[in-house]
Length: 433
Picture 1 (cartoon, rainbow, N blue to C red):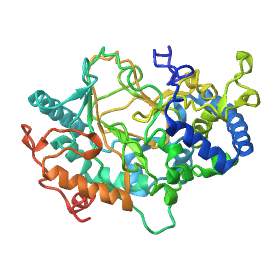
Picture 2: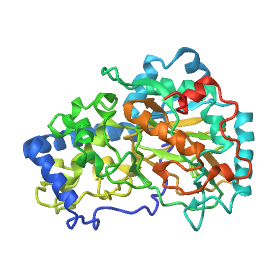
Picture 3: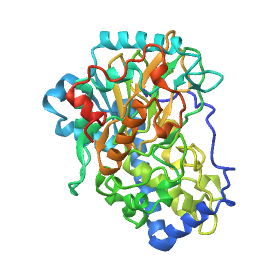
Picture 4: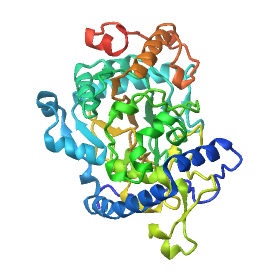
């Protein structure tokens, strides 16, 4: 099936270990949820979610990566997302938008950012330390050229508009959240980001407002969970436990803009094309332990409600939320993690903040695989506060607080700042907040 992983990588499994019994935050969080929602509701939700996953995973495996929506930037920037586009994006939680930047321009931008990194290699940091590819630069000329591009800003507004909020406190007008750049050489194995979900780990359970986002799941009605409701989520604290892996800003869609071609096994990205049921399963998983007989693993009714234990599989306070085949078996990750279709320079990939995704562990191509990480961030009270401070820090030579970086980027060779920005770009970067 197109897009499936041929051989499962050596990503960590979370069925054993990861015992958090000594950390009272885990135990207290579990108790608080059981006290608030009750054992029966959690058990009812667990059985329903697992049953739904049976048909959902069958569909994903049958369709392969053709299930991932693909749109033309020219078409949607002219006419917006069609009704069919919206339905498919909301179901899968992801979309590929082709041709946001002209290919020739994207190729030129890659040469520029590659040279920028080389000129400043002694000043900037990257990870993994032994095989650097994720670069801690946030205010480079190339990044700002892409972020401020009118087509990119227009697309971000359309993506933000897929969320709804009746409070009147938010808008789909995009704000720019600083993230890094990847420039990954070929033949470089990367196992550091297996299947995971960003936007906080234990925070989803522990932060009261964040937990309220998933109230229908915990209360026994996971089918009522609206993964696209911003009304409560706009106030959720994602980084209750501060760490560089956690964003304090709500990203309606995480995303990357391709600067080079990529395809399966060539430094691409893998997505799990379902959002609402998957997040429900992940959130309910810590309340149940698997049956002893492996033949009963896929029978949700045989799982045992775990009231006293406090293991949260794949959950560490300072990391993203990780998932694995053994710890989250009903997701059938091996059959459902899909490489995105082949991507060309100027194309973009977007995924919901609750979507499970992974970095391709292989890069068997012959050229570097490079992307700029640029998210779609709507205007909310919390994002305005952060973006305003981000701009002040940037102009003062400080890296964004979420990154905990210490490099003064204004001193890097080739730095240009925000010269030549349009009014729309200045607004998105926070100049008028």
